Image (cartoon, rainbow over all chains, first blue to last red; front, side, top):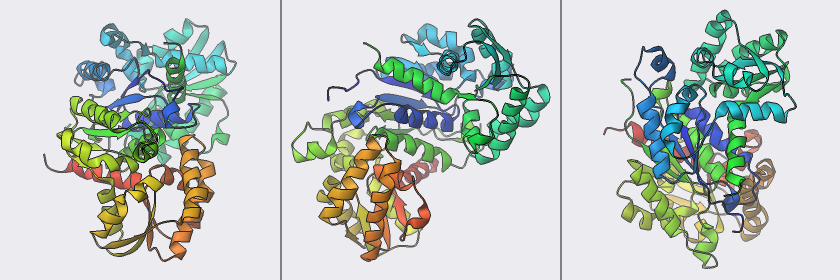
Length: 239
Length: 239
């Protein structure tokens, strides 16, 4: 077992649970491995009880931070050497978690930026599809802006009519129904000049994957895959 | 959050990692839920470093039991109230784990039996596809035999030529290549009189799902789905 990996990845998930399950699938399939023992050890803390991040940020629901910190602590106690969080909106509490985690937390926006570069897009206009909360927190606009990209986002009508209902459908396991509304938004951002669209809410790639990729008129960045690639890079880097 | 579930499911996984990731997907999709907070809290301990169960049982490799017990202990420390193990062969160490777990371990063969009954098959001849080790340990033959079924298994030639290479392909992420060899074995068991075939190694349903179900000439029991259903039943039962 020469290639056995001793770095254990922690995943703070459950937000939503299908997105974190898909993260585990993609982490596995994107890893070069010939047998079990060459795959990456991981602990997934899938806690869908974490209070809704959107209501928490708006002040209309309980604060999710204590739940997020409980998960971080559980992963640290399980011996994890880094943490990935396959939920974009939860990154609104990134600093509060990173301050106490004691291990690195891989940032999903940096993972998306790495995927853009990997695909040869190092500047220009990028569409960002995300929850209104993620957009309001400027998670992508500021962090991608510092790295040379300009972000555009869906208009208010498409956010309310298409993006928000589609992410709720995925959380309710009605994945196939989310495809067409999300496709319309991807292509509308392409028509407005985006050279790629970041699917910056981990429910969104699940909906997009439920239909034909050939209908997408602009390349997309799947933030589940992007975060999985960042995690594999961490796991396979020197101790 | 009236319907929030406070029972946390533990999953001892990584054997292989794709099977346990798929378990998380199916656990989510088979749960009736309208939003995150109605899904089942879970901790997945995915440790693909667990020594090979086949070599361990044969005495030609290290004993997996200490690794299995470490996972059980980690899940208990994380607060899990029951444990599911989406690996059939690991059930060869079921009693050793159950004796120290302190919480119930859902048995995958009982989950398969429940699926057979749910599909109206309460007796008769059942084909069992599994690792040679699972077959040699008589995990299915004895436990299903006690409940009224008779088990038949693939002949030695098909085990070596088809089943064993196919499970290795899945562990190496070459899932699509596993379909045809596994399909041949399912249908050969049907031709020998099996009224259903239990896919009694969690790599096998992954291969079977990679191709058209219409080519299956006999119903199959997917032990990943069966175990997920048993877990949901546990999670949603009274405290």
